[in-house]
Length: 282
Image 1: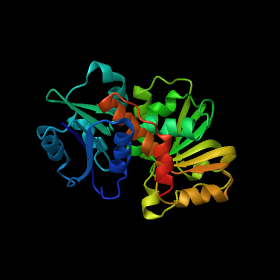
Image 2: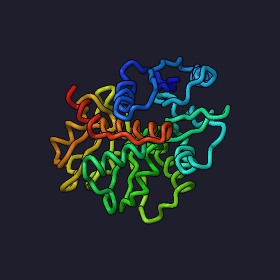
Image 3: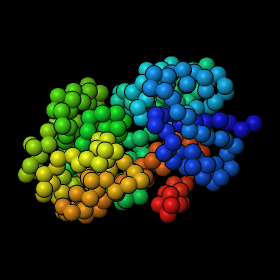
Image 4: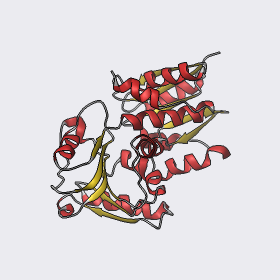
């Protein structure tokens, strides 16, 4: 019998996840189906419960439901404790497993980001100065795997400084990564500073806006990474014009986090590079 999976979000029509998991299925021979499901803003939990009762094996969660997903997790299995812990600490969950009447939560976003940066873009995070823009769900979801790579410095920048400060407090309460200097900043205070890796975890690209970064912020050899995909964002254009050595969108992250979800569900790790290459040619 074909095992059923889905991705839940709002909006969801743009999602490439069904296409990605179809390529994973064809590559591995796993007998699965995967669909995109639009949930009403106040109906996420009921959609998840319906899928569970209909025999689905699990689902992915995308905006705006990643925080809410962490609230409906009912239990955690021993083998997935570490993966759940990272998602739970960040209060953001993007992968659910339905097992024995229970819902098990994971967050694969950070794993996907780090694998794309290190394996596909060949950028070493250890010892680097990192600027993470944003203090919302996208930033929370990637925090721990990013810190696990032991950058020299992590600065969290946000238009609303109070939100960044609260983010930092959460980091300090949950993290064990004491080798990294962690601080917060608003954008004007970044003037005169340089970073080796700048990650845009804001939603500015959706509205065509540019986070107010000062000129000269990219160090020699810097990588500019936008977690958005499918378009040239203003941040990416700014990076190209202001000295970034490499610029990437988040397509590779999308595929890598999907591969981790696939592995959690099926115990099989698909090859990601052929899938990334196929999507890039579209």
